[in-house]
Length: 107
Image (cartoon, rainbow, N blue to C red; front, side):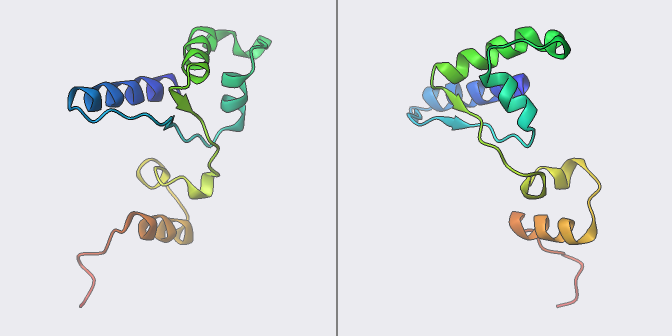
């Protein structure tokens, strides 16, 4: 999640340099409710000590109004088509969401 925040900040700076600044919150979609709650909740748990620095970085950006982290269910996570093996029905649904077409299909 911290890497995603860094990417969002980089995109924001690139757009500012191109004279196209963004005044809205940049959305970092996440399908992990635990990661979202850890980023928002200042209470540390024993199992999250290894992510303490990343958590502070993300929390700082959330409180600063730079990013927001809305939840998206796993079955609607479009990036999964590129990173996971999916069942045929879910795969075809994700392909349709991306607007991909089979170039080898008969016309």
